[in-house]
Length: 384
Image 1 (cartoon, rainbow, N blue to C red):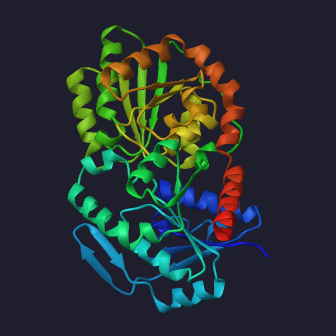
Image 2 (image 1 turned 180 degrees about the vertical axis):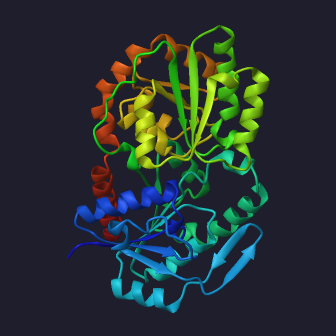
Image 3 (image 1 turned 60 degrees about the vertical axis):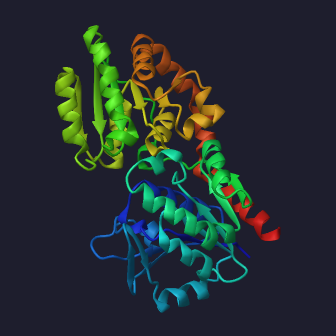
């Protein structure tokens, strides 16, 4: 009898990086023979995956019965209809995704007494997260969740060796296992296309314009050093605005004198992101902290050199940080500037190395391999 897996991510229908990861894992597990469902809150409006029949086939939408607000955090009541649907499905595993979400308490109750319950924090336990906005609420939530949720889990799933250490610090006595997540739409299909020949080195950032977390202020300051030295370079920032980040970056670029070397595209579809990746000479991820960047995975899968912050989950994988086409550096202006200079000076060489190294990344970030390993871990946890 196939194993039955319920993925618990209430914000799934809103889309985003975590939703893409949940969908990728669920589809791959279904291909691997598992029976899969995704429980997702229906808050009205157009679902992000409304046109994706492969997602609709196994999504269990539910309307919140009530809401309790504690500062910025919200606990939503699940309806009896969802409880009946989950009971009929009888999951062997409930896999919850993303933290600082009070709704995750339902993952313990929906699966029944015998279900394995796994939680993927999705970068929530990084120390940098607690130094940003709403730090007090996050610390209070963690204190409550450590007793009400974490100690009652069967296991944590960490996205990287770096996150595994963070999880151990939060819940040292709970079982853990480590697996990355695969790429999204921009990683699909054949690639390897080289950018059109030009004297200008084309750098690309993909992600929300969260200036502090993504280190975009560091990137522009590092870029200024290259522009002062008349190194032909251009940075394209792909992604949606985040709390006025684009305006701040435009102001900073003007103040640094690099505005002509910076452009913004706004949010793009997966296909358009793939084209932007193929047209780039190098992808840059200068984050002050990052769980596991979807953009970095897609860059590696499409055979692109990568300037990568050492404070990211990707950098903790030796297959990534040790790759000759990956320049892993501290998220400082000096570190990023040196990496950008290297990317410009060794542009053609790094491109060839990145293409040559793609099979390693294709295996590491294969959704089918990842799904198979998840299923193996579920079975081990069930029999423990």
